[in-house]
Length: 286
Image (cartoon, rainbow, N blue to C red):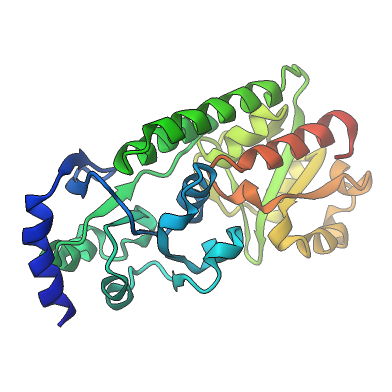
């Protein structure tokens, strides 16, 4: 029944005003000029939409986005890498904004939505603080809210310029994402860019992407500071008590910190984490 309703909507939608966009995986997507019901399946995109002042257009989000705003409580519809076809159709959105992380079957995951006429726009995931600006512009364009996105981008750029460290003495930094197995960031990632702009030097910057290093390799590279995200702050005690790590400078000197969980998301709100890391590297506190 839902499919029949959406197929009927295609005809109505085509008659109305719409625009053609090319998304992050090269698909051409027809989007209504006036978008009033959006589903966002990635927290970083959800934060940008909210920071543009558009929380009211969010009809559904992923479960990780629910905690971003009280107005989103109960709107979580996705907690896996698969788009929830039934729930998305039930909510009848004007647009779904997603990312490649949610496409468990690649572009094939989008076929059913193309058949029923639900526009799915796949965003690229930013790999740097600079690329967050591109995401703000992109969301502003597809939502036809350029003035709001321009204002948000201007605010983001001003704050970023104030926070970027000019410190030439970069402290050796290790960021632990997971502890079992150990998982961290190499170079050419968003997290690596945050560390560098805060005045740190990622000890694994010579390894591209997300990596699972050995305990021994971390000992050898001897970080001066260790960070984890606030959502996994229990890792701090684990790190402090690893017998084989007691001679690592960061452990020996108790320079192990957790920072705002916004560090996990390439959006406007990462600036809080950037500020905290910078303060720690400069002053050993935040």
